[in-house]
Image (cartoon, rainbow, N blue to C red):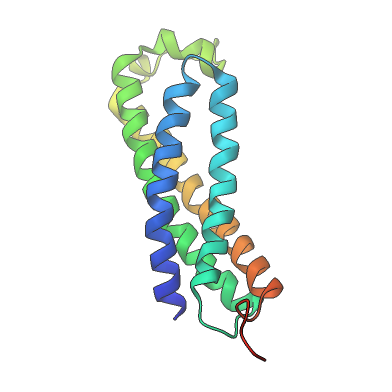
Length: 162
């Protein structure tokens, strides 16, 4: 049942986190503050996805089972969010030159990647890959946290006779 609950919550969470990721990327460009708020909302969404996975479990729940379901759901949602980040990084690197990225990432002393033989596409894949891996790790960890909390707090559904 952990797999089914985690997969169901993970697919729902993928849609939510993908939308939040797109909004974070789009709003982060004109306003870095809104981009950071979007990142915080994504982290909260991962916890909520874990809670949802534990909610989908049949009774009796426990913290360990809830954490497993939440980690699976968060991993699935993190994969969706990571895919969006890879695509966003590719689009950004195609639109923005290295000179446009230097003020954003603060690397004034580093030579342009083209001088080192690195193309914009390779750099975009590297940045997107790091963001994607971070999404997987954050999704699994925060999802497990949310699942463990609900599993421990509500071992039986509300209204269920002991």
